[in-house]
Length: 128
Image (cartoon, rainbow, N blue to C red; front, side, top):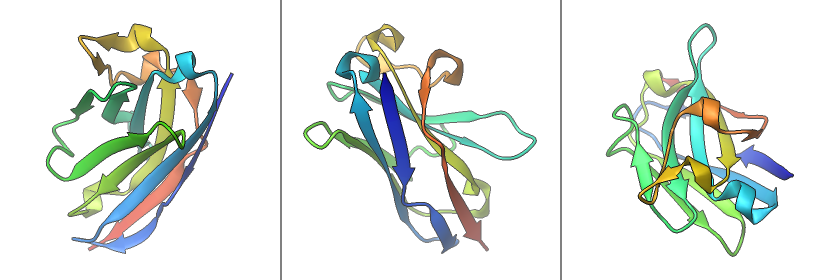
């Protein structure tokens, strides 16, 4: 069983930066793929970035070039560095994990329906 805990959310002005962290514990096999997702009330959850245990990453177009996903496997922690934030980035941010079956050619899917371990979320609010 995998447990995930996000931290680092908060309020920031447009153009600012935040770094989210996701501390993971439990079965390493069940967190070979990890991802960051976000959701605004009334809208579908969006998969914004994913990372494979061996380093392959993918990004949604909405965050590409502004956000960077990374991980420290020794610390069992995943990060999301968010730069050039704007009001559209306001959302609850979640980290999620799943096994290697979600990967293809070293890249993990960002399809939230495929992930089965989730954190509680951390709120990010960007004011203009």
